[in-house]
Length: 118
Image (cartoon, rainbow, N blue to C red):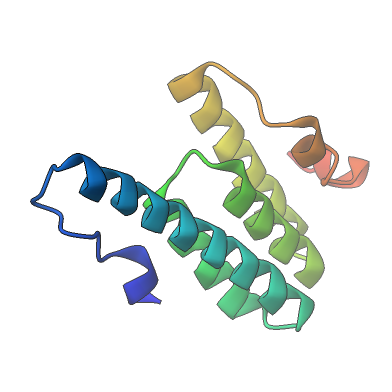
């Protein structure tokens, strides 16, 4: 998993072509981690799914997709408090850093009974 989080292409170079390729690889890495987290959740491997989602978050902390994967994994395991805790922490991060809220899709992931746990 460590290789998926690091290894920027030619990190000390700033040629235009390198910058574009580096960003392409970064995006590819993020989407691969997101897809891996989803697949592992579907296969009933929640610990590995969480690891993949958290790796994606470490690369780009403000992307919603890996945060949804974390919440989805917690919900699949029945860890309602953990799902709510992660959701609320992400909401706080979005408000303080971007002055925005999570998507309606993310808000609807949490059943009403989970929202009353807080």
